[in-house]
Amino acid sequence: MNAREIVQALSVLSSEERLHGMKRFGITPRKALGVSLPELRKMARRIGTDHRLAQELWDLQIRETMLLASMVDNPRLVTENQMESWVVDFDNWETCDQVCGNLFIYTDHVYRKIFDFAVRDGEFVKRAGFAMIAELAFHEKHLADEWWENIFPLLLNGAQEERRMVKKAVSWALRQIGKRNAFLRSKALEIAHQMKQMNSGASSFIAGETIRELNSDRVRKRLGIGS
Image (cartoon, rainbow, N blue to C red; front, side):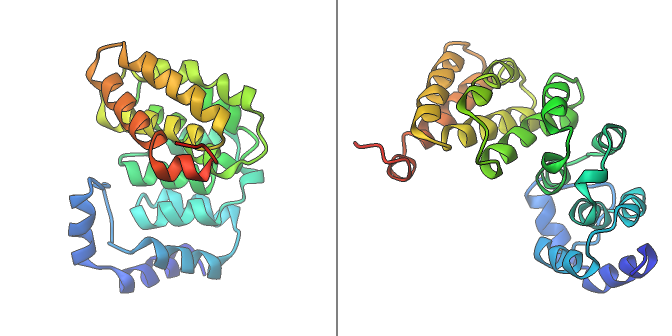
């Protein structure tokens, strides 16, 4: 399938009702057709891996083609320049999080770009840094605990950010790190209590979410922590 054929196929799957549903969840891309993520993933499996097509799809700047691009691209061929070009196109949390989770965390540049993006000014660029941390914490099983401890200063810095899309990503990242194992849970809770003492709206929000989830029976049971 070429880009034109893909857009035609997506148009058949478009849904006005789904577009309204997306808006209710704060997903407001510049241009969208209203195709569900499961349908996009099904199409991505049919397309296979295609780096050149991924760039063509991205350049169309339609929600669905951009998400598809992140699903069919080859992370080994993704350059830092491409990541820089794509990240500035993020205009909603879904595109940001999907691209980070589908593609960016599998590139050779992920660790460097985390520390780069997380201190930038742009709301969705900054969110991308923390979204990559959250996605990596969920998917990457082999990184040492010490690596994650080095991430905590970034999260403390991010906790001073009042913009909704950033503070929610910082919370997501801290909670995902804390769910990796019992040691990191205790460290994440320490960071959350430090944030609580910062007495800002964002830091209180992040601390509250983190303390509540990491102290939940579900998380404690999964990590083998007694009452």
